[in-house]
Image 1 (tube, rainbow, N blue to C red):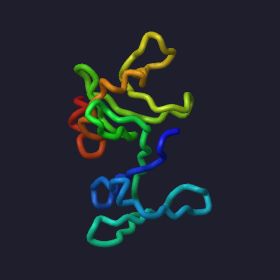
Image 2: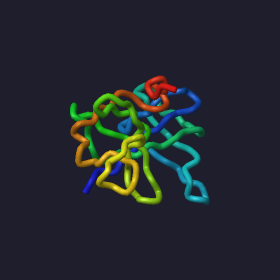
Image 3: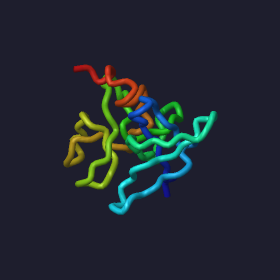
Length: 128
């Protein structure tokens, strides 16, 4: 069973909140998170405008944890890790594995992936 954990993008401060800094998520009546609290080592912060990214349970070839929104390098391209609701799994967009019915990287090949950034801190890595 994979470890369930999250990191978050703080839109107000324009920075990534690592999993170890997240301390509490407060849910509103619609079960959607509206407030997140985190500790940046200097104090407790509250963020009202954030994006949660879930850990895939996999690590890249260097042992770096792979999260939703990560940009990964596979051979010569840079692609985005995302959750796909219709198939209920994490996919690497912009790959096509001919043995699959959907465009995705076969995660059996995750050991070849390398996390090179994420869509919030490094959008330039995606090119045009």
